[in-house]
Image 1: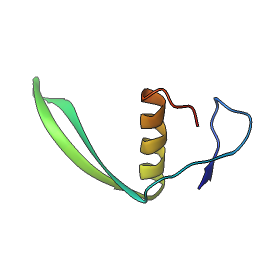
Image 2: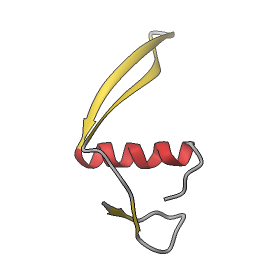
Image 3: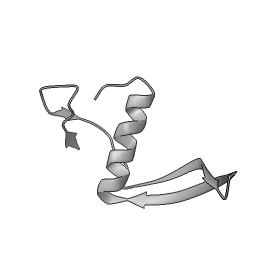
Length: 59
């Protein structure tokens, strides 16, 4: 797919999956709890984009 980003002036091509599953820790009632969620569509695309940034990839 093609996407843009504030880190680049031009549109770039990237591989994105239609769905993604994310595991994360969340504080619930003052304690850390492991959570997992499924995302699809535009949300999944944005999560993958931000994970790329966390891994040092600028799209």
